[in-house]
Structure formats: C-alpha cells, structure tokens
Image (cartoon, rainbow, N blue to C red):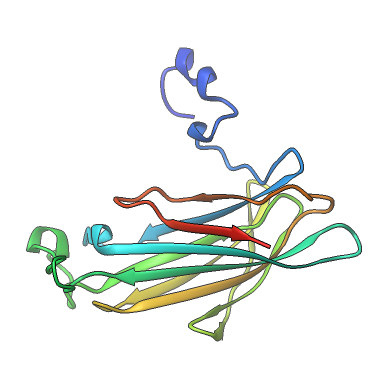
Length: 180
C-alpha cells in the first residue's frame, strides 16, 4: 500500500487497503472492476449494475456463479445532457462514446470459465493476477445504449458462505444484487 508506513498498518485487512482478496473465511469474494480506456472523462454518465446468481454446486464443494454486469450510457438522456467538451475528450472522434474494460476476478481457488456480451459468446483469455483468476472484455457503449457482459465463474472448494462482491467506486454506486 502506498502512503505513510505508520498509517498503512491501520488499514491492513480492511477493504480500504486496496489489496485483492479472493476469500474471506468461507465466503468467496468476486471482484468486478471497470477501467476507462480513453482520455474522455465520461464516467459520470455511466450506470453500472451487477447481478450475481448461484447456478449450482460441484461435487468438490466449488460453486458455479453467473455474474452479469450491465453498463448503461446516460449520455444525451433528458436531464443528463451531453458531456461538455472538457469531459468528452479532445481527441475523441465520437464524443459521448464510452470505451471501457470490464474486469472480473474469480474467488481464490476458482476460475473464470467463459463470457458473453449481449448474449453472444466473447473470446476471453483468463489470466492470473496476485494468485486470482481474472478475465476482461473491452466494451464500447454508444449514447443511450446498454451493454451486458455475463461471466461464468467457479469458486474455490468449500467456500459455502455468502458471496462478497467488490466493485469499482464511481460517481454513483453500482446497483448490486447477490442471490441464489
């Protein structure tokens, strides 16, 4: 963690320390993060909703999860308006277009199996980062459009507690639902 060493220890082990956690006791931790891919600062015009549903259990104690992330552009909506030039980005050929990377992390011992964008399979190449399986999808969202990415994930073995979901903080919090 970056910061004063005397203060860093106070945050260790909390969600504020910024460390990746794939499990908390018997609870699997799923990470859903959004990374902007452009100079434009149009994140204020982006709504994010995340839905996690358990689809089944495996004989080894792992669980199958379906994680759906829906990104909606509010650019041009009544009351939202269009982004001013200083937010739209000077080099942007399509002002109001939102380009982002959707990144999902599986719980410790688990894996990201596959993904689909707007119900069509998308090619992913799961990678390891800090010992956790992750995958990502690069997305373009036109003004007023919604794009959904659904990830199939398995948890580690014997993680039978409630799922913990971590998301990227934004100007408005992500709408989250975690169910069975």
